[in-house]
Amino acid sequence: MKALDAFLFGTYPYLCLAVFLLGSLVRFDREQYTWKSDSSQLLRAGQLRWGSNLFHMGVLFLFFGHTVGMLTPHFLYEPFISPGNKQLMAMASGGIAGLLGFVGITILLHRRLTDPRIRINSRLADIALLWLLWLQFALGLVTIHSSAQHLDGGLMMKFGEWAQRIVTFRGSAAEQLVEAGIVFKLHMFLGMTIFLVFPFTRLVHVWSGFASVAYLWRPYQLVRTRRNLAAPQPAARPGSTDALPRPVPDFEPSRVG
Image (cartoon, rainbow, N blue to C red; front, side, top):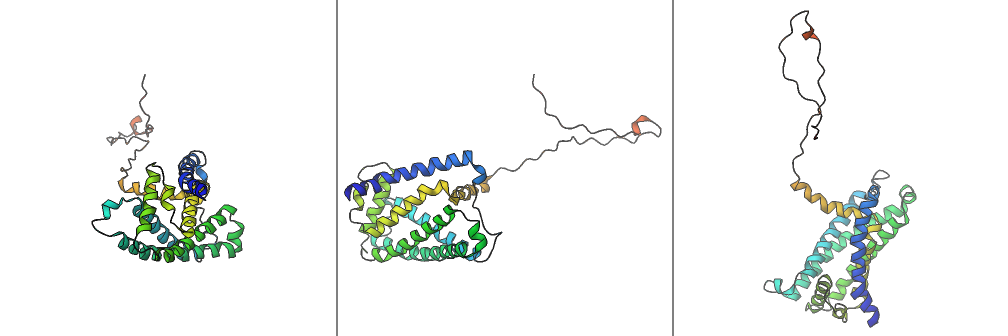
């Protein structure tokens, strides 16, 4: 078990992160036409609004909550909140967000499996991804009960230390999880696996969602006409060639050399 833990929580995270980053880059470079969410709204809009909104609200809160909670060094929040109170806050907020996401992913999974039109247009990867997310939400909710057995916040601090050692390439990261129960380890393993399969599924559209924030600082669009606007000409004398219409030349960029 020590060798397995060393691989799953010491080596496997780097494997998942490498595939996550490089795989996303390769897919964006070579298969941009597959870079989409593959929405099934046109097939049937029923249940999609509730399921999608609940799922996205829950998963976005949990993603940023886990990121900030696990990667923030202890000394930064220690003057303001104790580890025990931080754990209680994480259990309450994470429980609400997890329940919302679980209900949402259950609706989406039920909709995809029971509607014949959506089922026949679904790939195996789509259904497998929904099951993976459903199981991850379920395990996350189960960890709340297990966390209630360690209200001093000590175990949560070890999870944070593990994550910080991973992202800073420090050794002995897996040793921080010796006291973690099997439910926590399964939850963490599935979370890393989601990053591993990310580039091969419709989840790649998440990159575009985060990139859309740059729309707020976009430069103004500059539009130029391809035709020069001719200046108003004086009225032509009757019977003269000046009365003939003159073609407006197309705009051509100047040639150098």
